[in-house]
Length: 347
Image 1: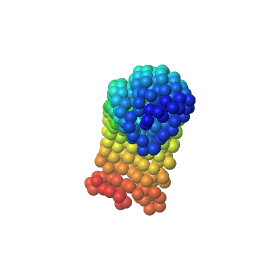
Image 2: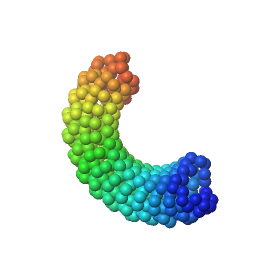
Image 3: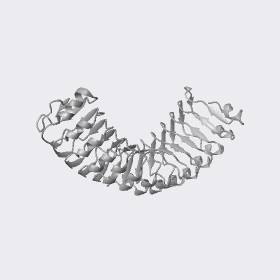
Image 4: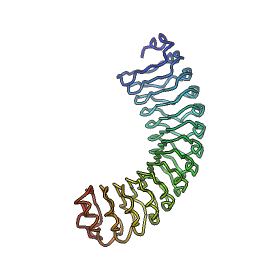
């Protein structure tokens, strides 16, 4: 962009150049547009570092530079944009740590830093940004524990921390995020038992915890999560039986619990999840017969029961779903351990 663009329109309050096939770097002259409130440069091919004096744009409320080729550190001066409400920097090549100065953005509602090359810990100062409704830090190389301070963000509705290198347990403090709708932490190095406090998130519809190192059983209290539609807990180290209280998850559509160490019978109460579409329980240690109550789930599209220790026969009521309803993917250990007249794949 020519420097004259920034110096010739000093009173401009909005600059929207998104998706224009623009390229090149941004000069320090951009900071001359001190009246600017909205800056949209997203969806271009800009590269290089953001000017380190970007903090001079004190009136900026929306800064969107996502989907470019920017690299280098996020400027510390970004903390001077104290009127900022939305910060969109995702899908770039930003590297280094998230600057501590971000804790000064008290009016920030949306923080989008996903799909960069950010490293280091999640700064606990983010917990001071109590207006935040949406945090997306996924697909970076962030490490260390999840800050307990995130539990102070009582307006938060979306929290994406997945695909990083985070470690430790899920803080119990997250159970205070009563407005949370979507929580995704998959593909990290998280461990420990699931805190029962997550069951306090009565409005949660999506919970993705797969591909971590969680242990223990699925808390009985999770049956209180009546709004939950998607529960992904596969590829962990969960043990014990699935609790009968799972029947309380009346809104559940997707349940992926494969590749764990669950044992005992598949609870008959799972037949009360009448909205269930996908049931993935393969690669566990379940025993006994597949429950006849599975035939009550008229919305089922896929059921995976293979690589368990099940015996007996897949109930006729389940096979009837193949003929009359939506079920088109039914897999079990019918080559050796179980009889299945209607499986689409035998293992």
